[in-house]
Image (cartoon, rainbow, N blue to C red; front, side, top):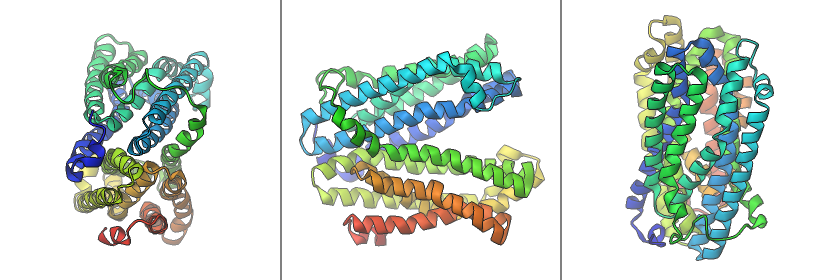
Length: 446
């Protein structure tokens, strides 16, 4: 690999090379979570579907820990390579490799040995207990595979192989769909078959992304470096905003479900679910852009190349603005058609969701800026600022908004909560950016 590609190649070319695979990978990863549910719901039954949905928090524990270590180490390694610290970069990766292996192995053992207790903790009743326990126990066996696939896939970006993670994710989704069809529909293995399909799909992705990490000629690989406990806390702290995002996702879903149940009943929850599916797609695109530019930012920050740093941020911010405006227009003008894909024929849900979508759509005009800012601070090692932004848009102002706004303007206040949170975070983000001595022109250009 040309070590200097992140510091020498044209920014627009790097942006395409790194962000496009990241965007597609993000969207595929988001789709992965519903594949098992689709097959189980259609070929096994609603109880099987419910069982898999109940296990999702356990999956989030696995993914959450992986993302904290993977994103934290990616940023750390990128800055060290930019500073020319080859040995330190190798030590960081070796430490991340060992830490993530230990954590995922511990989760695996807990999932296998205490699957039934975990199922009860997740809320499974007597009817669903066996199915939830079985899925938990089976998917836990693959925790180390899932963890290493994510770590290797992310670190491939900083060694100049961002396309491998994309190839791995494409292969995994094909494998998951194919195996679900065989194991669930053809062999009638039900929930156990779904868990095995997902686990084997991650194994297929691991084979794709592992090659550079097993190559001794790469600057970062599993054979070079040594364990350095002193980098664990900085690495985890640097990636901790990813943990905040996971917590925020769960918190938002819980609060919105409870509020919509109170003000609009089950139809309100169904309406929010349809809009959430649509908005999630757009948000994943924006996060893909943020993830894609991470190695470019961290390397050039470490290399003290501020012009390339600013150019990357300007380009990413403009692209996210275009995406946000497009999503605003689509959701505002074509909300009914999109909602009908999920709630065809149910007029009460469609009407409620369409009216809500036109309020919710305003969030996209600012969310791209907030996501880019959070990703930037993670890339340069300012975890505190990244956490503030992630917590502001996903927890703090969501909680404030959802408790205050509905009391003032009713159900419209529920829909307005996300735009409110994005607006308040936008203001905080501008303050943090200016304090970080970035050019004020960047904010003005946006």
